Image (cartoon, rainbow, N blue to C red):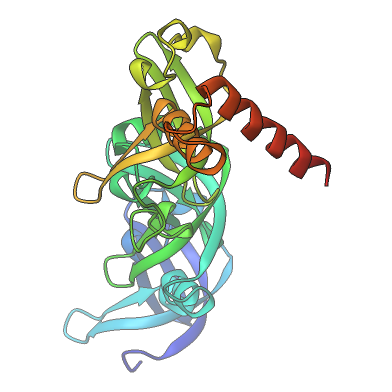
Length: 288
């Protein structure tokens, strides 16, 4: 019985520590509980195999002096982590069900009863992991990107935030740029908003004082979750991963542009005249 050879045998006895397999008349080997299944850990052998069942086994070790043959049941099957790597190389996208949420992250059910883990730091680009993990529920189907596979340690690292590019890389957002945002939360101090690509949205907070140039309009309660509005980017801090937004700055920029196009402080035209001309011009362009 050479080590590594594969044989077909019959289960003769099942114990707490494994199962005995008859290879031929008078020759039996033991499949230790740890060698029975790739994925069913800490499960009684009786829940994996049954007496008289015919099974394929691989010889792991032979001790001639003790007339003992050590067998492996799982070694006769494909290693699910190797199979996963072949089917889903690093960088590919997988889909699975959330099996569990822990203090470390999310466990996602994958092919062949194996799990992959999304670490807290790989859930969302902008939301802290402890907060981001709360959005997911057991049984929910999610997509994730394969970041790493360690076949020996039987670990698969996944990332949800990597499905979309990092919104802070490149020149996606610039100071002075106008963006359309969606309100995600209304607080007494201002508005929590999201904007940018759907796959990798950017979060920001518009302070109450930046909601309008008019003090009477600086009331967050005027808005509701889901409302959309335009705001101007007033600062981009890539190191802190923070973008500052202001509706007031956008209003002032639009007023300044209107004055430059339709009048000047020397022309004698009032601000009302200038803005009226700008609005008429905007309405005319909209009809065309």
